[in-house]
Image 1 (tube, helix red, strand yellow):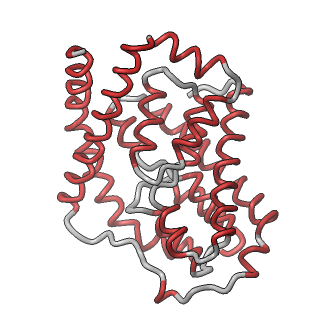
Image 2: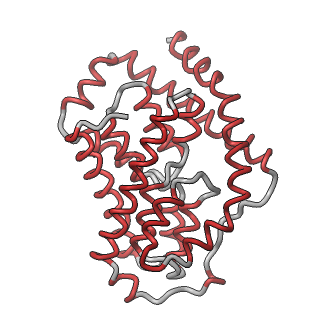
Length: 280
């Protein structure tokens, strides 16, 4: 038992410098592009899902949160909101970079998420766009915005420590589970039962916390889940954006429909990827 605890700690500590450098660079890029991205998405109109898919994948300070606020103010369509949610990767990017995943693999995953976000966004606008037209928008002054102010260095340190904690706890849990049931048994359950991996990964992705994307990414990198399940979890994972939506959008049925649509699309796309045998 002591061995798997030490293994989890050592593996997590190895990632610390890479996580910090990644978050530092991401913070600099975020500060330079944030305002421009918001203006683009606000003025996108009917082609919003295109910009949503592209901008959602760029690491920024709670971009899914900004999208939720824009949707509440009816500055973007429901399809644009969904495209951003699906495209957002939360903590996947820094973890994969710190784990030395080949850049072509990372770019392929991001590209697939962008395309899925765009296609799904247009579909949702066509199928559910009437929802937005029926609801009265709250004024912009009523809608909270993402607070990205503060020191880039302090933010990078804070993100690094937070994600390090989640990685260590999750690695500890997975090592313990493997110790009890065996790695082969765990892989067999998740890979041999059709669509189970996608369904479970999608449910994990709904957790409005960076721990969800940490868990999904680590499971994939450890070879416990496949590309379809990984993509389902990462597509559904919209970070704290869903929390902001529920808090600010005072239409419970609409919120539930949006969450169900996000979950359904994530699971379906994951199953399609699995059936097509797509690998990253």
